[in-house]
View (spheres, rainbow, N blue to C red):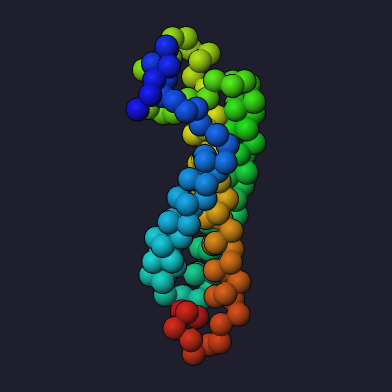
Length: 134
C-alpha cells in the first residue's frame, strides 16, 4: 500500500473502477431480490412488489448517480476512498469521499431496479400453471 504525503492511498480512484464495483454489487443484490420474490405467494402481490422495488430503486439510484457525479466533479482530482476518512482535515474535504460512495451506491441501485423490472416482465408473462406465476 502506497501513501502520498497526506496519507491518502494511491492510486486515486477512477470512475471506471467505482462504476465496475457498483455494478458488481448490484448484480449480487439480485440474488436476495429473487429469493424475496419467490417468497411472495400471490401473483399480483409478486408483481406489485417487483414494480415498487424497481421503481424506487431506479429513482433513488439515478438521484445518487447525479449527486455523486456532481461531488466527483466538485472535488477536482482529489478523490479518496472511504478508508481515507482519517486524512480529512476540513468539513469541505468530505466531498472527496462522498462522490465515489454515492456513485457506487447509485449504480448498485440502478442495476437492482433494472433487474426488478425485468423480473416483473418475466413474472407478468408466465403461464398460470408455472411455479414463477405464484
